[in-house]
Figure 1: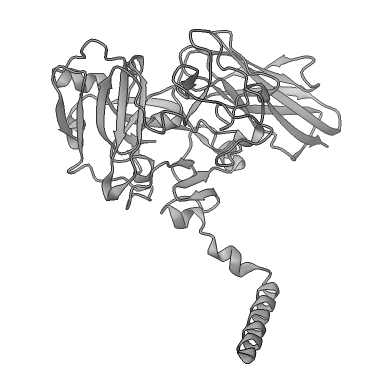
Figure 2 (figure 1 turned 90 degrees about the horizontal axis):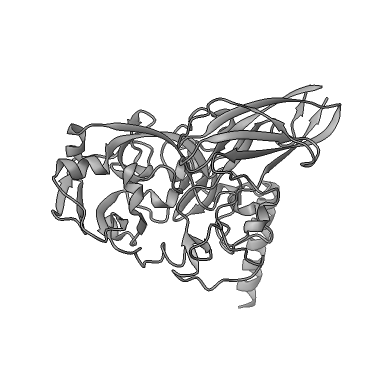
Length: 407
């Protein structure tokens, strides 16, 4: 027994020495990169979770693709991993069926390929995880450690849900107050169900393509039910069943997950929660992460960069729920004491993000610039995003601050 222990000890010591000599590379190689988890993804994406797959877009990649976010770098937040669908290639429409029922006078089932013969509609929209920016809350809430890369600007194309209902001659019944969508459970995938209010029907889209290509399987192909202006969790991937219901569904993803504290029947966007404390979520004292919150990002300069002065170009994007237009983006270089208006690329309402740019005069040295968006509803971003702290870190919308050096 003594000889075995000694031999084992020496072997472990040898392995340890070899590991240290290799600089720990053996351990690092055990962690898969994004392209190994999802075929076709850029290997530079940050792996936040291997199962279910959660990938974050590095901020510099997001900024370098400010017009539209390519499928290769678009973030992934899966609550369910559908076996065989971890690829950016499109999924086969053939044989995919979707049931439509609940509070509708003529329930029906359709095949995904039928959608190709109906009028197609296109929408450019912000796709964003409701936990994006979670690490900016203090103390840090639970959940995947998102920085700002859980977002993208993409173009979906497909058939409006209301057009499909009309084509099938189906009408909604009284008390159809919500749209409840179910993801496929192929391969014994866990149940995933989300409900949104019925007014989302106006823009609801059964998406078949993204950015002009077949909808990537990992992003919900062959068919994803998307609701422009809503957070990503509501855009149910691999949709297999759509119900019109009176109330919200009661599964975990509707309650208690993906909710923030709220006072019923008030205009407050949230109920302040003491940082670090828990909250007894109910349908009565909280609201779901439905509509995207107003936000702005600075894409240039980037954090820690050195830029030439004294005239420094600052640019980025701003977005909201698309109900009203973004009316201004303001910049401050003195901690919010004074603000300068940036130039907006567009002023009409949109579900996509709006690009903006401005120029500030700065002497050589270290500086911080802040960006704050306003929309036509009078909404703006709080200087301190922590005022909306919640234990799961949803809906961060504080002003963005970037520190850089002017040469």
